[in-house]
Image (cartoon, rainbow, N blue to C red; front, side, top):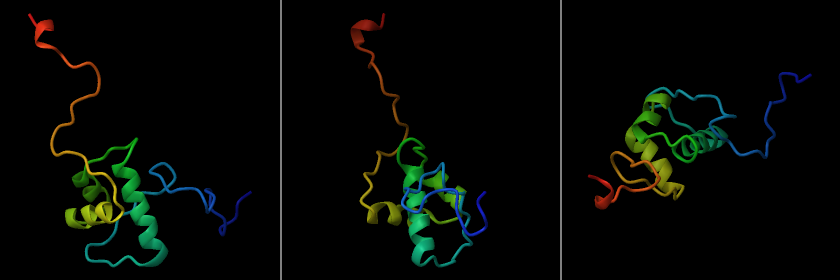
Length: 99
């Protein structure tokens, strides 16, 4: 039975949206050390597969600004998606197929 000093996830397990609690940070609050690293990993997991949240949605969920979230992603060299609607993957409709 785990006690208050142990966590449910191993220390070497990567932080993902599934094993990290939602983090709401006060506006203007500085994050340093392990808390900042954990928050950055959480933001990256929300933006990346399988969550694929938009930056603005991450802003609403975490309480941080668009610029802060964008900086976290670019500093981590996360490939940025194109702006706007993302066309679903699959077979593209050819002009010949449409009557």
